[in-house]
Length: 265
Figure (cartoon, rainbow, N blue to C red):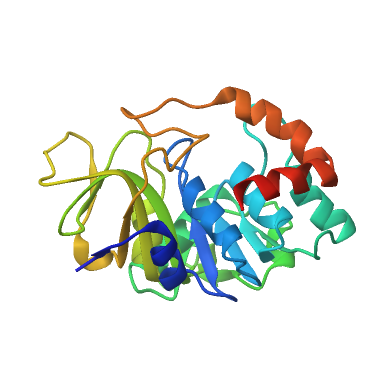
């Protein structure tokens, strides 16, 4: 059963130096508060995984937490580039960053394979791209029934998965709704998991379209109201668009970024 704990304790137990870790969320429910706690605790040599790394990963990379990024798209949504990401790739600041790039479909299938306990997934993707030439985790496979040549992608097994959700009950069962991405698959693909939530309630009310993560697949739950800011939690908060615009200027300059970093310490 999941342990309900303060955020700092939960992060210390779930995210460790050298881990392959995903902070997943799509458009909303992005676990910013947990990511900031990882920065405060000084985690290093992380392989960061996410289908759509945005501002949170820019912050983690700029803080020197990341050794490698496994992803399928990266940017400040609606604004532009991730400048700490670009600085790490171009200039090795604050440290060099290794990249492993995939398509969205490839990443999603890799999560599903790991969540299903399979070694790889098969899809009709990557055709016509040069991605297979640049990663060992993409290969061709011939269907034993039809002879069709398909693409195989290795299962994306995680040491840790961190997601944000709207609610959990006191037993550690988690409920999330709205625009959901691969949060469920990421948790099931991970050895350890942490879910930050807007609130802990006595009982989860049935809700159409909601995803429920049972307590036996979650290791830690931390109650962190506003834990998705500046992204949003559907029915709890709205997206802070001004922050995303402001981040473009902050992240362009190393000194301004360092000042921001001191502010979350």
